[in-house]
Image (cartoon, rainbow, N blue to C red; front, side, top):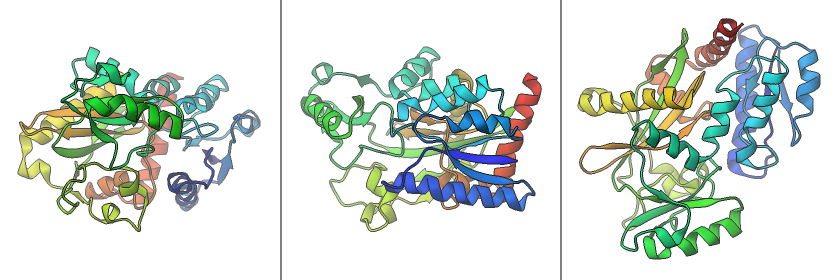
Length: 322
């Protein structure tokens, strides 16, 4: 028995995507011979207590927020640990850390892993510097649009405006004008494996529009950005030195944060070819059209095999702990 848990409500495209992903994963699990069930744990995680009584083999965790708050996504994981339940993905400590981009950046900086400079208040930002204003706790590019990139003089106003509009804490991060890469990792026999690395291309975006993957580019199929931010593989062959550095830093993130199961590390690379870590996603989307799945496919891993590997990583990890 492998239940697929989530706390999504279909009021935004990214939340609906979680529901669709849960259905795809449950179908994959059933094809593998498991009994699968999709369970909405709601805002208080109460269903986890009675779920523990059913003694699931593994719980497939798709919880990205609790009550719409991304900073609380670690709470169901913490409860599953207390109940002695095995689950996919990162442990509660890693989930809690990475639920705050600011705290994650502090840890990465402490490990010597490059990450763009950041400011929690607009008054400290150098006026001539270009920054991107983003949410501390929300992923899926929530709260990011074409107007998120501003100069330092406008950072304070933009932070306040977005906190009022979206809620939660926003901060300003130095905007790295350059290329973007997503490095996916999956745990194999207790160690992280780096999958083929895609670059996100911005060549066909209109002049003057920031080269970023904002909410529209990720979730609005009617938008120009959605269709003009494709991924391109092959950096390992074209630029092996850069690919090796991206892989090295991604593995450094895995160990610095204490990741497990599977994860994605997002990078920008500046004009001098220097990579810098934007953020770490401990629960990257596993929809059949998602970037992580495309990355696995580039490594020859079909969807059902990918889901099986995620489950197996959880089984092996908890078996070692026991």
